[in-house]
Length: 286
Image 1 (tube, rainbow, N blue to C red):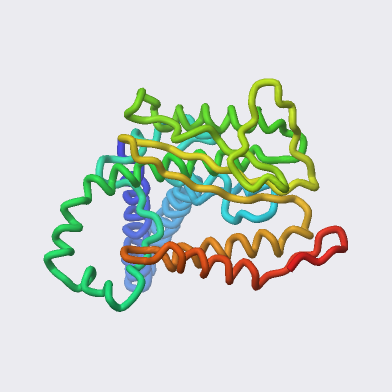
Image 2 (cartoon, rainbow, N blue to C red):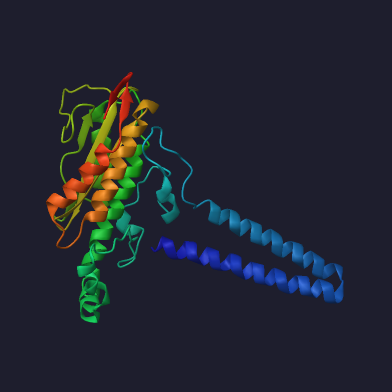
């Protein structure tokens, strides 16, 4: 079932209605009859109904209940997904049609031939099936991430959050042994814990308004892991910290690519991070 195609068909129907309305208006001008006017109104009503149906499958309506992340937590409904998500992602898209994420150019002038060379471009197209599998895992990760972001509120136990996230990950990727599943235990790290803390059974740590939390989880398909992390907070005093983390991450992505030196990537990230300062409880941290 290709839900994306259904959405496109709805858009085409709206365009057809607009064209029909133009024809009717011409008829009214030419004939001046009541029948043509009624037909015009009928077409307009039909158009409004179809637009309303399309709007129902828009990009989402629910904003994250915390600071640091933008967008809607239910944005997956635009693909025909339920809220909360219950349909395996592979059932929402046909093979070869998984959404593409952000694409970056190779850094440096010495890499321009990778784009201009017809031979390399042809070789790139040979890998489309592989890229599609990666995009499949990426879309699962994206929908699970949005689902989890709707749960993150002060008062939730970290272990409950992690279990809900991992169970949803398994559900949407249709876990199947080594073929598909979660990439690794979910990292759920608070404040001074930089990363890679996972609550275990018996850990009753609760998220509070004053916490800064880092969530890190992965989805694997065919043994290849899609990994992404994000940082959230509730107190506005942490906004500069979240902005610094995001800017440094984007700079690292921009500097990455074939033949890029890891030390230079790290230096670029550090330079951006150290250009910010944050005031926490009256104390300035450079």
